[in-house]
Length: 350
Image (cartoon, rainbow, N blue to C red):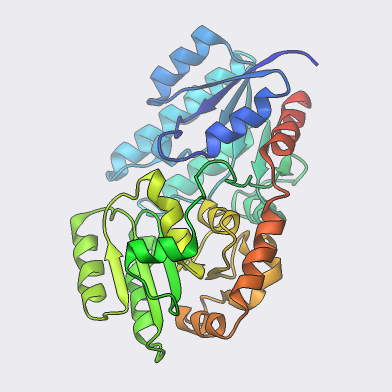
């Protein structure tokens, strides 16, 4: 197999193991993976100097939109021209589509137009499930799905330590051993609907239910809203700060189920992380989640017709330990070695 140089853009390895694990999986096939960040012109300069065989994009919203509409137009134009320039240098372009639009929906019409043009400039696209492929073809108005490849999202088996027992984890967090504990862990941003999750737990009559919320809010106003709602229910414990890697296992091992209270999602690394820790996942019946969580569909809710509370009530009646075991068995098949090999196959076909 010929050696190949691949550049991942942007470099989001700080705080997210996804790209690093994928790079490790690809590198086992003799591929040299580097990372680059920065605005398009500086990144294009790096591309021109290093001449990778493939530029593999991941999250592209930072190149397309900002708070200002005028700046968003300018950024999108520069990014698309830079991509076209890379193509003229005979560099192949691959894009893993993690979400259809930026979660904050700052300027969705500008961003969607930019993504549609960018998708046409790419040689190949990668998504993490069949539903995502259908969505990408439809929303980006692609003429065919032939160049959209389905490759699973890998597990996080060795990305986080998992040595703390359930009893030890609950003792450290002050949680009773007989409580049913739901967990939300991750950055707290408006689209993730954490205040609505707290309200859903407040509507449950079971006094033995606990909700652990752990993560850093995106801004102080959102932090105040989450804090206000959490303080109204003693069953809710909100730790509004960044969770260090060494504490991730404490929260997961103290919980009975993970909750993703989103209204809309395409792919979810949080669901993969919960499955890696052998936890059931309560989440919306959208995007990749129905395929990923096919062994526990009763814990998914239709955001157009159901509330989060409906799914939480079903979770209270479910065999959560058995579901967690099934989830772990399923996600264990998504090893980064095989995912890296499939990704390399996409590169080789260029």
